[in-house]
Image 1 (cartoon, rainbow, N blue to C red):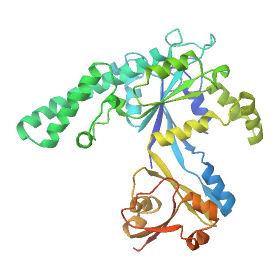
Image 2 (image 1 turned 90 degrees about the vertical axis):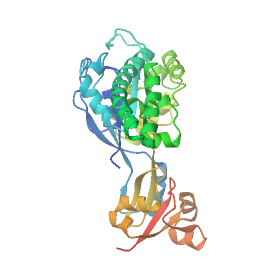
Image 3 (image 1 turned 90 degrees about the horizontal axis):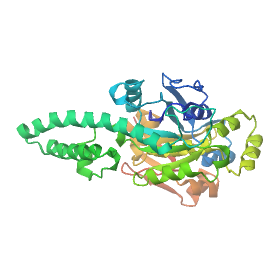
Image 4 (image 1 turned 30 degrees about the horizontal axis):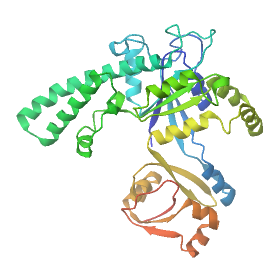
Amino acid sequence: MGLQCGIVGLPNVGKSTLFNCLSNAKAQSANFPFCTIEPNVGVITVPDERLNKLVELVKPQNVVPAVVEIVDIAGLVKGASKGEGLGNKFLSNIRETDAIIHVLRCFDDDNIVHVDGSVDPVRDKEIIDTELQLKDLETVENRLQKEEKRAITGGDPITKRLVEVLHLYKSALEKGLSARTVVLDELQQEASGDLQLLTNKPVLYVCNVDEASVVNGNKYVEAVREAVKNEHAEVLVIGAAIEADIAELETYEEKQLFLEDLGLKEAGVNKLIRTAYHLLNLQTYFTAGPKEVRAWTFRKGMKAPQTAGIIHSDFEKGFIRAEVIKYEDFIAYGSEAKCKEAGKMSVEGKDYVVQDGDMMNFRFNV
């Protein structure tokens, strides 16, 4: 799908360590600011137990999981919106992503320097928020100046609606609020679809904690939860150093024993990858046969012809129908043939909205 989540945060909060755990692409990691300059891109496999069960059942020759792209972006400092540090590069890189994973340091360690001299994740969050908001305010004001002239001279209702939205965003940003806190109706959303504001991107806050706090969190995590309660954003607690240790273990059994000792059911990076996938508004449908079981990524709300086009453009052009089996039914009955016999296969047309977990078979003619 070509969609990306960008990992952002102040220098030395654990972004690159976390990225290394997520990806085979090894970002440099060191105890000083601006260690990451060029953004590192990792194509990450999305953990999905449903795919594992399909493989056990079908026993295919080949397996292709869903993936998501994660980008490790250079650390940001105060003044980034004015070009301080690597500010312009940071803002340019983040503008190209579709969602934000904001890493916050929520642990004490005298051996790891903090760019501002003390641990305060809420302050750190506000530093980045402020820089992004200032850049968005600049974008909004420039666009407002242009669109207000057009609204006066042209009287286009869409332009007038855009001006209305820009004023709403301007008001929020001037109050130190992110664009995502502004609630728009459907028409307003349509009018402002191309604005691409930095603070309008969906965000996940990742609290990087020490080993003692990985299960129940700590005072820093609670402070973050309180600070973001009105943003409708998810907060995930992960110990990046622990995840790095897990990543070094060779076998699945070793990793599970390590996790059990910590009181965890699964690695934090698995939760992070799945959350990033959903943050991008992505879902999965499956195709299954003796040659291949594959997870296909699509945007939530896509209709059958569009999802067929993900496999090949000819599938969309010549779309006739989609034969759909619900994942649960496929697992229960054990095969496509048995599902068909039991009346568990539906035939859907061009208006069918594909659901997460659907088993799909497309009929087409070009």
